[in-house]
Image 1: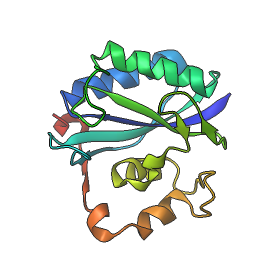
Image 2: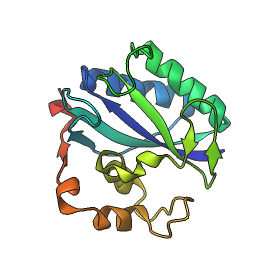
Image 3: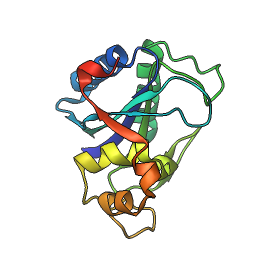
Image 4: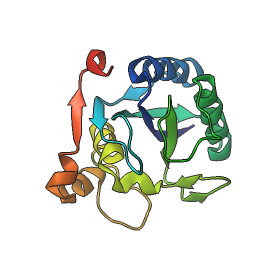
Amino acid sequence: MTRAWLSLGSNIDPARHLASALDELRARFGPVAESPWYRARAVGFQGPDFINLAAAIETDLAPVDLDTWLHALEARHGRDRTQPRFASRTLDVDIVLYGDSVIVGPGHLRIPRDDLRHAFVLRPLCDLGPDVVPPDGNPYSLVDRWHAMPRAERASVERVAREDAG
């Protein structure tokens, strides 16, 4: 079993889609560590704010198989991959870390995920594993990376109560 660290986001009915996705993750993988939920502006396009969180699971799936399973999860939630990459979505789930692996796979599968540079990915991960050091050549932990981010970027994510996630 390998620990996989996931980033989840939605800006279309996020409370419903994220809660349901977490339920499906639990049904398939067992206990899921879940971060608090955060609101952040859309990145790369104009659109409604996203609700983001991180989850950690123990998986028996290889990274490519886990990525395929997560894409099917997104599809069950109405994710339309024919839309532009930077667009509103019902559900987005990405593998950010997979054990201590470094992987370049099919499609956009990159582990560690480059999105670690974004506050909306890094902040929730810090809640789950602040002392984790991703295997990307940067010797700093997640929490050290968070504190090194510019203040304005750190302020761009706001913790929200699950019931206020809209």
